[in-house]
Length: 431
Image (tube, rainbow, N blue to C red; front, side, top):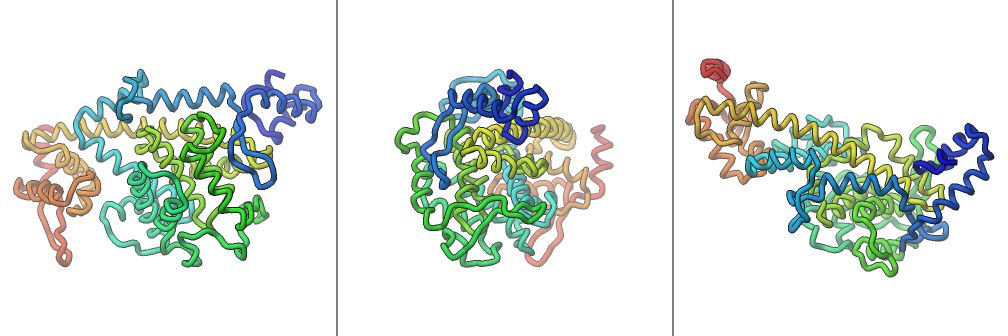
């Protein structure tokens, strides 16, 4: 029986495990459900099918939340935080950020772009991640619906960060939906409004086109959304304290469950997850591209929804899935930090060219040495480093004066190119 109680398996898995143990599957399932009831926490969120959603406060849930807190509950990311964490990830971030604002800004920009790209690609955008980030860095207008989705998702992430002081409301929800879906929907009139009773919406299993889920009717949305807003804002009666990451995961699930819009619900749900986590002090999430992990193991994403829906609204399945996604995102973030540390070390070596090159300039030259055909602009340099155009122009013009770059024109725009002689010049300096 211990194997059955370990983890949090849905019926589709537990019945096979019960048979392996020589037990009657239905009897085993009843015993497991009785044990789960002892740690059940009902949430003030109604199910259209009857009853309320809830979550089991299991050891597995506590362990996952502890890992998140240990990695992000640090004074680097919280105003008035509770002190330093012993997490190796946090120590690595602390070392990187001690170099000043440049690494921090570059990291924030890169991950925001990466999340925008991955979330869009998951929704069907045809561009690759590199193409998406290139478009955002260059600041060029989108040339397709897919590129428009990517630009919209990037704007949506910026809106999330600007809205951390606001409470969740129908106005904020629809503003976020407009930002994420503008000029990307088959029916433009569906942008920024709740679905209508005449609009039949269902979630389809892509494997056989069967109906996987039918959301509550449109007529029920106002009341159900009112409950959701109260839950998100901490004003729901009888809710009590719930861990913010559990709340953020529940918000993600509920937008998928309610399906308040004709299209764009997934993008909106993922954006609200970030909004809630950041709003509650989990600043590290600004640097995590969670959609990339979801996309790479996409089959688990709809399955987590289905398991929760089939098991009488037990959201533990979905919350545990989200915690696993976060853990994978933290691991990928640690790998990214290691690469960024290596870039900074290599950039320091370029001080041999001139002792007063700033870090942004050295990083650009290092990139140019690896990608000599790259064309840089004031816009791309400003976007990559999170700086104003005047500062970006000063960086680039200074490199031209030092005869490390040259310029050309594209219409009225100035293009900056690395000089072919840079590689030889670097070699002569022994770099």
